[in-house]
Image (spheres, rainbow, N blue to C red):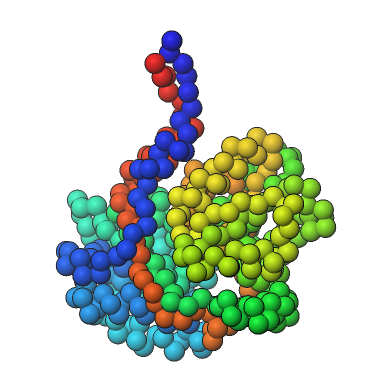
Length: 368
């Protein structure tokens, strides 16, 4: 007998392309891409992919790199080499101020120009998110998903992330203390996303989903912003999404994250891959199904880059969810990451097709 069923995310997850090792030479051997995007940061990784693409002979018709308003002196050290690499791709290289109020409109203007130059072709854009802050990544993905373009995401994985296991075990309290620099220090602001403001049509209880970082004050600031009473009495209204590193030798970071953020075994929590963006999408969708009818959902993506990518697709599917960012006052440029282990890609393909697949979730169909 025919019945009406609702399409679930699990039915389309297998269609989303996985993260895979990037073949730099293969990418460079193709026809010139329409736009290459990257960020200028203090981590040497901002130079890794552009440098290897330059060596391989990669070409693009246009290039833009994002500039931050923080750590200006540290970032400036990498600027000459980055520009040298990028100018080998094309003479059309321009900076974009990532923290300016008109960033989204300038990014749209750039995409409109690229589309006009491509004429009848579907433009091909590559985004190197190796040193993009999650806040910037979410902004970029929000704008990208408005267009029918071909998009590849690339991520250079650091060879060493701090703290190392030895550094943490020698002095765990250093990484728990709020007044010690560590990877970063303080909170300059807690800001609701203007791109993902959520819907507050009903006066429903708050439900907060947190991807924590290695500095507990950032998560505490987000909780306090939503409802200060949740710091002392979360009452099941705060759930933690804890990252599982993809390499076995890094799995100790999961327990370290729990300790640093004082996440006890009795607190609601899920373990989520730091590497497979589809796992983030799966867990977030499950929580949304469970809580969206009874709560106002707020999400703070302070985790990995791939978790932020999964968050971006989740927020496209559910504009009712509010995003909140917690920005440090200071980054420790000397102790963030070192080297590059591997370079990875997520070829999202045509974003029109991707949106179509995501839009199917929740739709009804008749099943025989």
